[in-house]
Image (cartoon, rainbow, N blue to C red):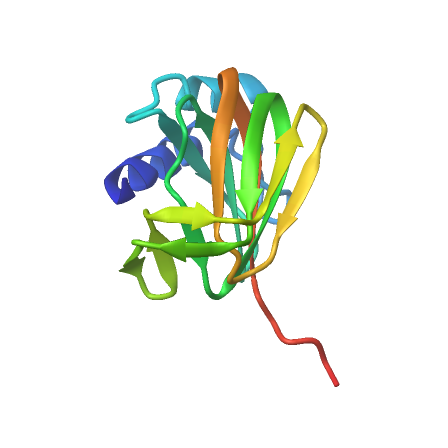
Length: 153
């Protein structure tokens, strides 16, 4: 998966139209769709350029994902196409740490099921287990990952 993300990131960098310094980076919807056209194990992602403390993934999911839990990152999903059920919260058992603060696998007991459709936005706070299950075909979404920072006092 890490190798696929690195490859996709380098492909996006090559696909993005070169911009003069200070003018941003551009990748068309067609380029992103092409980069996510061939999912591996039902998932394809492209890591897009962002600022410090934030990650943006353009994701395509064709099969249910693993349970995920990020101890230091909030997730925000913006649905582009398709439908999915996303279970958030509850308790998770049987997961394993894949990187510092990143847990995958296992099962969720309880939680809340959100029915997502194009245009919907879902915020998932750090520490909340979650699982994406596409409904009736391909589910495309943007996943913004933000560092969880304590509120100022």
